[in-house]
Length: 321
Image 1 (cartoon, rainbow, N blue to C red):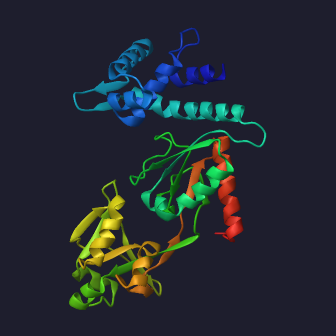
Image 2 (image 1 turned 180 degrees about the vertical axis):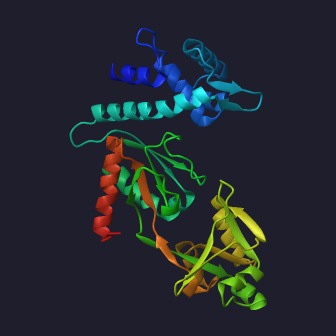
Image 3 (image 1 turned 30 degrees about the vertical axis):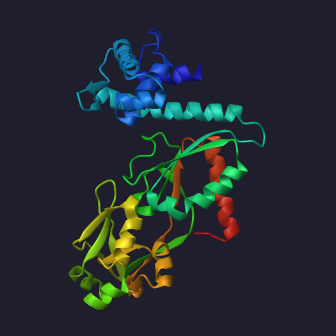
């Protein structure tokens, strides 16, 4: 009854007009999330024709077009976008209510879906997930790796992990993982012997550079800081590698193809072996570690359990930042 009342408000229908099927609304929302009928059909376990018929029926019941179909793409109309935006919290609240209802005292059940950048999945999040999964074996965890910095609510996630400069507004943010991290610039000793070692960040502009690009299209920043002077450089790239291929970028640096700028903890093992040499170490700044962020309006029990687990881990590790 509560769900139907909320849905009635979302759709803006008169009280005496029948509500569409909640399953039909969910089908529409999955199309909005996945961006296509075939992708939605795979997610739902239905045929594309069934999904198409569902949307046709829903549009007829509502009396407005929700989706613009072309031979190659699917786009939401203005009404469709407004409906999807308002349905998201309804579905999240429904999921939260079900999780709370099925969780007995001391046992947390339900689904936890978190949107994270690829960098966090490398070495920060896996040990946290390992401990959480052991502590809460009846919580189903789904991790969406996304370097586009898209809205975590729009992707159906309960929470997201971001670095400070990419945090969404109107969200609660709590540190997760190391309080501080550090960047590093590096190159193969053979490259430095051949091209010379930069003595100032501006010297980087005259070197071959291996850069990484986010899925959004933006190149990763090269930032340097020393004695109050901050420089943000955009060097010409000899090689550009998408961020998921960062290991290949490191291998290319080891092979002598140029300078690479990345997380120091990713490059440190190669400093120890001598495959790479640090460059301009006193110019490479440290920065805040990642944050777990989530809506202040809705905290499902699996998410609350995850927040509490992260906080307990940080206290145990002596992290206060």
